[in-house]
Length: 309
Image 1 (tube, rainbow, N blue to C red):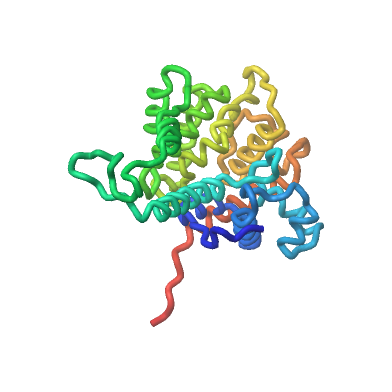
Image 2: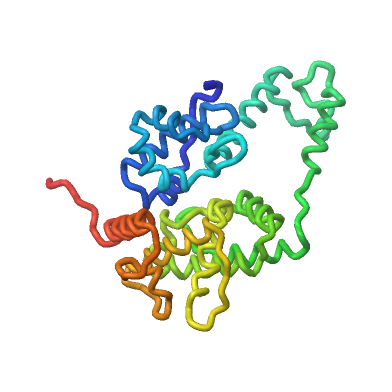
């Protein structure tokens, strides 16, 4: 493991929003894996359960029971497990370090000149930077992501529909994730519909405007609009829709959460409702939903304890 960046920034609001549904043990394992990823080449963790269990100091059997919840916040790629937050922070910090290193080689940060002639700014031995460096910088600055027409308007509709949070909207990162989603095949209408459904849900449970609302860029990166795209496909008369395994898991988890919130939608197929004889939802999803709702109630219904004077 490398240690050229010994300090890992932690986005507190994002961390709380992403891990509110996890148990203290799961949160500890998740954070420890983030640290290991930060110190690993490419910010990747190995796709090796035995090795991950050893890194975490727990048995392989215990890791097998905790992995579904902890690794739901990670993405498995060809290089291994990647966490979006760690990768983004690592890229940001690495960029700052490289800029400082480059400025140091040139004798410090270039001073601005009244005539704005950057080619003659101080910080270069001969008054101008290497021609190849200038060309590389120009190419980087002018490179733009090509996205379908109409994306700008679609992004603004998404931004307006997304629930408010206690911090400002992450426009730059959210726009990047939105464009990636569109290029991957998502439509502005389905993303906007998902954002509206998510906003209505957060308002209903009293979390709108708090730190428990997911960050928009994280919500987009995790394709969370799919959580709401099929929520009514099993009502009578609705056309059958084939869900992939991940969509089916999210659909079952959301319906199980609705069940434990006492918000079960009438007309939904009983095979998705925990406790019914024909329920086919796996036990681990039912338990995850039960824990998520219990955590919600603790956070929203119990007042904070205060120490006696």
